[in-house]
Length: 123
Image (cartoon, rainbow, N blue to C red; front, side, top):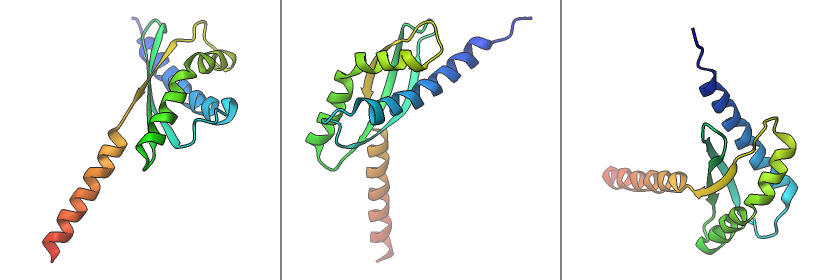
């Protein structure tokens, strides 16, 4: 009977990549263009570990600073991959593709909208 270790291994690697990528960006690279608060929400590696989608959320009231921070992270993809290879115990470190994830901001916006509707009904 064959056990499905590929899924568990991939899930563990995704979690490890998520944690390490955040540490690399925030503590080791020290890019002066990364000025806003950010979070690595999720990492999805391909089964063969050739590539990984890295979902990033950047928190900022200023849209321009938000874009600059995300672009700086995206531009550092090769440096981040190089640093990741130093700490991850895997034969291959995937190519990193950073994707801006707006779901947190969208959720916050919807939350505020619902609160304002709720407050309007109370009056």
